[in-house]
Image (cartoon, rainbow, N blue to C red):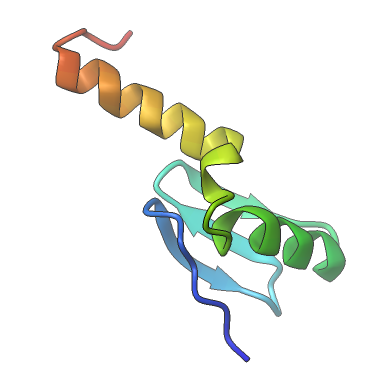
Length: 72
């Protein structure tokens, strides 16, 4: 059964390639098990996706942008 990805930064995933693409970039996993664990724990978890360090970084960047701070 396909996963319903919950993270708002999620773009696409490929289990055969063990790859996840999000707004922050692409993650290439060395094993299918690692890919499945990560996507289940973060990308497809609600709640849970907020605990991903990539999602946290993007949330912080969005908050700074909304507050009018300049990014380096």
